[in-house]
Image (tube, rainbow, N blue to C red; front, side):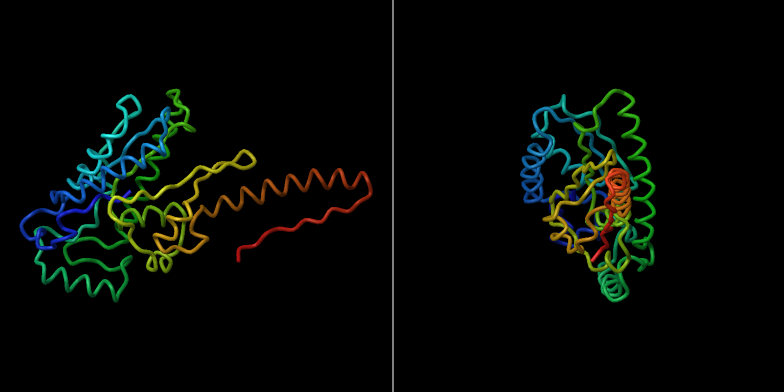
Length: 260
């Protein structure tokens, strides 16, 4: 999820005197995060477990504090600060005129490859979150070995708008052009990926309402490998039917779906 409304979201002059990572939530931002906690509680359920990853920035830590009002302590497996899901780096104390000019240039050049003079390109953030995903997968494997039922465990990642979109870009393997057409979620908006199972395979799909909120194409809601799982399961099903139909003298015809 994205953090609640921060002081920098309403007054970019805050970055002139305050380091970006220390910019706090506004009161509205705290209220947004508190309300998001109610939605998160419904998703987790009474018996569900959760572990949190959060960016070290104050606005994401403040968001976590508000969320925890609605989650019972015994439901929380762990909370972990994760620098790799931090905001894109724009530089140190920022000259607002220079930053504004750079953001205008970025709009024309593209967010993924444009590099701020004293900061990062979107590509750098993409590399960071890609590394984080590998850690996330290993952590889940470790929790499973420790005896946790992953079907009852929810992972909540509290991050920033651009970092969130680049995480999804890496997870679902959509293109740079598709990323450029996407939009940030609203402050304190939960973007939910639901587990799907078919033929012994498991993957996560982005909920349709959240795909629309991010302005992503329909095919950017699930990993491309999930299609291979479906085709493999269909192949085995048709193979078994083919053996049966051959015995009865009826030829088998297989139709394989294509993306439209």
